[in-house]
Image (cartoon, rainbow over all chains, first blue to last red; front, side, top):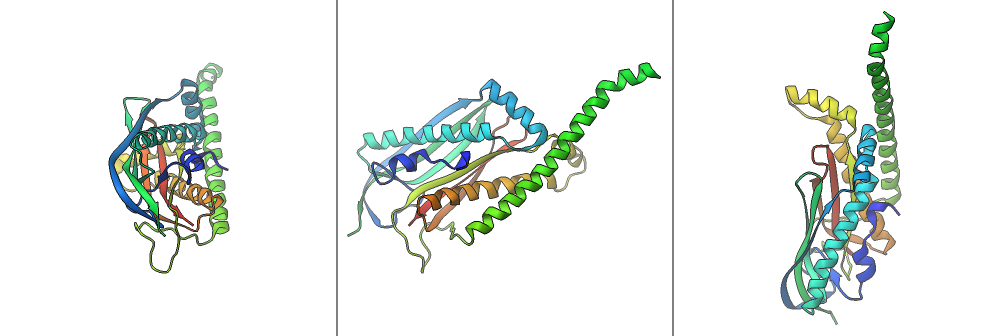
Length: 124
Length: 149
């Protein structure tokens, strides 16, 4: 598996604790209660060694694997924080999940995940 | 004459280094494109939709979020050429090719991860591109959607 394709939240949470989708409804489920907006964020600074490594890799161009992993891990962290908030609201799913990434200051990026926490029931 | 050559030596060495790295960059770009072609052919026609619901005729339940991402650097050669392009304006083809590769790679990773989990289709596919390099031209492309099976 490629480094950029791991999905912590789906591996850990699939069908067990929290359903995450970026659609407004979940196929096969009915939303019975909306708990409101939940979000999670994290700001990561780049490791100096990784930064130098990426700088060298960029002499050639192409994928910067260190950064791909870093952003993937950070996004999973932000998602996990969003899931924790939803769990504290007794929700079992988050619909309409959105991600944003912004570069703030030099060398730091903010990863932000947000969505609507809901309670869903499987269709009979 | 010899003194001039010795004085120019660092410049010549740097020139050779940059030239070699540029050639490696061009070759690796072509290899990546071939790899993308091969993987896309292996996947075939996986149903992707950017609509929020499944279109008629496609069935699936149990939605779950799935994503793929990649960070790509342009390389110094393209950065250098883009500098010239910016003097006259117009399309920066070097960068266009890098972003196309990044977007295809992110989409492929998303599909490959979805297939591993037994997905039959992905709906509400979204792409997000962000600048993560500060002063350097590094771009992250993330592709995400809701997979159904």
